[in-house]
Image (cartoon, rainbow, N blue to C red; front, side, top):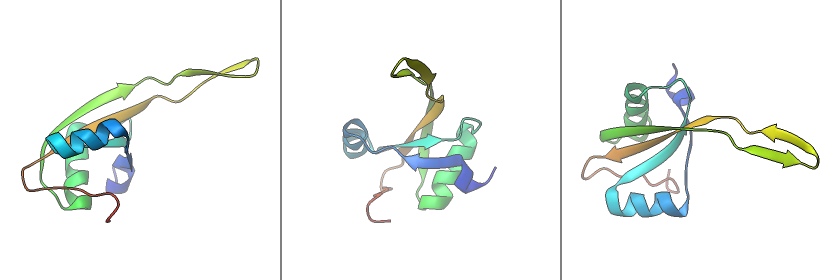
Amino acid sequence: MNLYDVIKKPLITEKTTIEKDSKNVVSFEVDRDANKIEIKEAVEKLFKVEVAEVNTVNVAGKVKRFGRHYGKRSNWKKAYVTLKEGSSVDFFEI
């Protein structure tokens, strides 16, 4: 799998910003077929940082209504990447 296909986008929310500042953990939306090893390699090569740990979560898509019609959002995978001491990623300076 291509490095650019593994990581789809960073997740920037209030919760992830607090985790980034306090625990040095960054969050990404990743490809559903990507495993922890592929995610670690992609983050290390794309952002030039050292990764200590990768945790993943499969997020189920929500059922939403559009008027009287029902639809379902896609399932997706979230990765919490813990960086080693001294490593940091700033999404707004890249």
